[in-house]
Length: 464
Picture 1: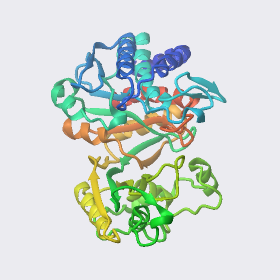
Picture 2 (picture 1 turned 135 degrees about the vertical axis):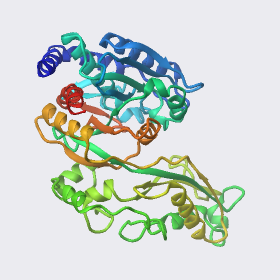
Picture 3 (picture 1 turned 180 degrees about the vertical axis):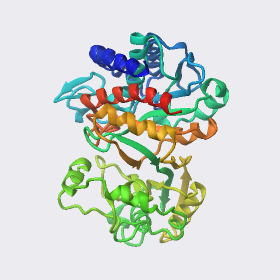
Picture 4 (picture 1 turned 30 degrees about the vertical axis):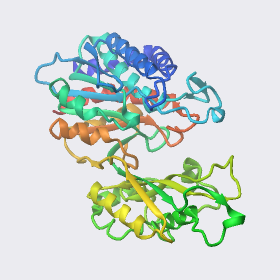
C-alpha cells in the first residue's frame, strides 16, 4: 500500500507540474529582498503568498511567525500519522538584491524561460525549494489523502541576511518546530542532472579593516613621496595573509583543521574532475592559475579553509583623481572548517593584519558575527533514506559532497532541536549563478528534486 501511495503522489506531480511551475513564477515576481534599504512590504507579501501555497497544499495550522522588527517566516504542519517520524521541511522565501540590473538578460523579477532554464532573482535560491516542499506535500494529500510521515514546514524570511532572528524564533517556538529529521532545501547539485547530498558546510569569519594615515586626501604631485599611502599599506597587509600559492599564511590558523579520513579522501577521488569543466563553471580566465597548492580541488573547496577579500575601497573608480587617499578599507572573509574555532580564527586574523601594518598607519578592525561550520554523520536512517530518494528521483546515485559556503541555519536548528539529523539538498547546479546576475534554474532538475522529496518522505517512514 505504501508503494502505491508513492506512485500515486508521483503521478499527481507529473500531472500538475506545470501548475507548480506557475506557482514558482508568481513567487519570483515578488521582490522579497530582505536586505536593509529594500522594501520590507515585499518580504511580507512574499510570506503571505507562501502561506496561501502551504494552505493549498493541505497543511494545517498555517501561520506567519514574527521576529520582532525582522521579516516574517511561515509555518504549517500535518501531524496525523502516530508512530511515524516527524520531518521538518525548511526553505526560505527572502532573496538577494538583484545586483547590476544592466547585466541581466531579462528583468530579475519577471521569470523568463530560455533553453530549459528559468531566469529570475530567487528562482533557485530559494523559491524553487519552497515550491518543491509544497508540491511534495500536496502530491500526497491530493492523491491518497495522507502523508507517509508527519510533516512540518518552515519557510524563513531572513536567511539571506544571516538569519539574525532565527535563534529567538527557535527558542520561542521550540515545541512547534520539534522534529526527528530536518530537510533543508538550500544547497546545489554536483552538476546538471547529477544529484548531491551535502554533508558539510564551511563556516565564515569576517572582519572589516580600515587603514588611515591622513586627516583628508591630498594632491599626489604636491605631497607624494614622504607621505604613507594607506592604499599601499592596506595592500601590503592583505598580501601578507597568503603565500605565493594562495594558501593561508597566518601562523596557527590551520593547526586545528580536522584531517579527512581515508574513506572521505577516497570519496573525493571518485568524483569526476575535468579542469576545462571547472574553468567553465567558475568562469576562470584562461591564463589564471588554480591556486592553493597541490591536492584535490574538491578538498580545497569543501574541507579546507580559504581566505577571500570580499571588497576593497579607497577612491571610487569613477571619481579617481591624482591624490593620496586619506584612508582605505577592505572586507576580509575566512571560511572555516572542522575543528576550527571561530573566535580563535578571528583573533589570529586581526592580530596578523595589525602586525603587518607598515609606516605607523592607524588600523581599525571591526569583526562581524561569525557563522559556524557544520558536518553530519554519513550513516543512519536519515542519510540512507536521502541517498535512496535522490537516486530514485534523478535516476542517478547522488554525489556525497561538501559545501564551501555557510548556512548558519543548519547548525543552529539541529542543535536547537537536540542534534537531530539534517539533510541538505537543493535544486541548483554550477551554472545557476545564485546571488549573481542571471540567476537561473534548470527546470528538469527542479522536477527531479520534487520527485526526490516525494520519495524521501516515504523512505524516511520505511527506515525509521
